[in-house]
Image (cartoon, rainbow over all chains, first blue to last red; front, side, top):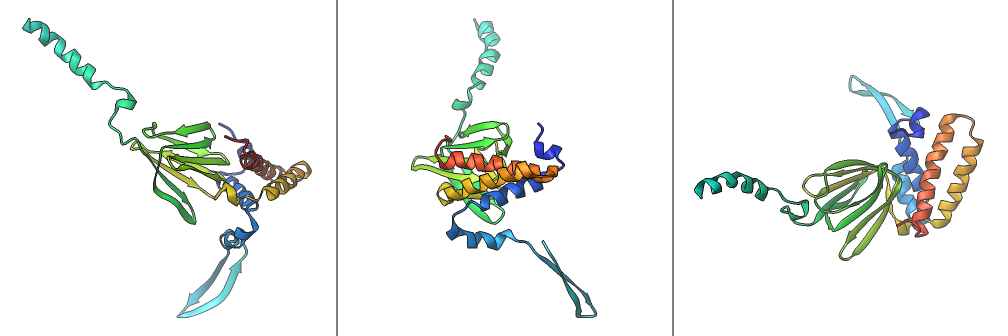
Length: 61
Length: 163
């Protein structure tokens, strides 16, 4: 079985997250605040040295 | 006489062991577990039938269905029980039918049909179609095509055209 998105170089995770994002956009306004909480993803890290946190680095999603 | 019965005995024993799937010992109930990454929608939920659309085609699953793993298309999952039917629209995922009448459905995102804004579907579909025709690179074009497929299925589902 071949999928057009696969031939274009996408993998299943990319495919399914695009589809999930598309579906979230169509949900009624009153539920959107709940959905927005889980849509974004963020990452931050800091290197700890001798019991002290180093510079906090934020990575954009 | 006794040698005849001795001769046919093994044959009858074998025949007695053969049966149709419908005659096999079964509770006749289909148990559904329906999970999303952020929520367990249904757990040990008893239904009589589940209709879903898989990449390999649309399926109606009853108890004692043959074990199978199906990739789900963006589409409706219809859980039918005596008290009525519950319809969810899933963005995609997998349905795993186990040998013991337990059906596990995993999806990235799922909403009840009544939570879908019909106008938003039409607006998003138009936007994705515009994006697909104006896209320069293949990835953007393909992303728009994925959205179009989902929105068309969703539009059919909310307008009641889908089964």
